Image (cartoon, rainbow, N blue to C red):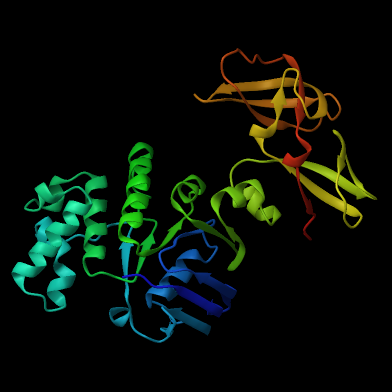
Length: 347
């Protein structure tokens, strides 16, 4: 089963604190969407409203076109996977996965068969008789996922489900979550504050800040062509270059950029991986001195002091294969289309 989700004019406050403001969002049936943003941005509040654990101060929540705004969690076609898994330690994995089916009145033989089917989906059918204490963190996360899927929800909610895992296991589980979602076709709504995680698994990322939706779209568009300065900042590293738009060009300490628009102060953003070194093609940024360098495996992360703007520090990801030495001066450049120009925000 799968269903669409619609948020219409959602607002929610806790006392005088406005947690959500004017949320309007459509999630298609079968879509994998991540709600992404820093702590306190409203993403968990939005997920809780979708799950029925909170009732919004204003607005509507539709699931499959049906108004669910005031429907209690137990009567919604949703289930939630939490970060702490919440498995019953005294039950076998089979009984943990079948618990919701048992509460729904399904007979023992049928729910055991369904539980084993779900455990097989997450690669743990042979461990059905074990108890949670015998499993690793990643395996317990799989059991929690299997339990949530066993009741065949139209929408699966995931609240930072990978936050307690180490980096290698988290990346493995990201791949598995995406694979399982593609197999079953259920709508997944996944809360995270991890940008890499969101980009790895989502069909669409919803970036949130201060209770509002800043941007939403496919991961590559959100990263390469962010709609707002907040999104550009939040989605990985970026260099900030001050600029002033005049006529058909933007003046920066590093040179002129072609860009039309209203005159005034702007913020120019440039990703570290878009800075080219050596004898690069593109828009010359002039010579720059390497002030620090660190090896990161697939790239070398360096800080640069451009001769044209010695008070400005640029971060660049340069290719491995040669020694980028502190104190070395190199020519740098970037393609004009790689610069992102934003109006300066008040305050």
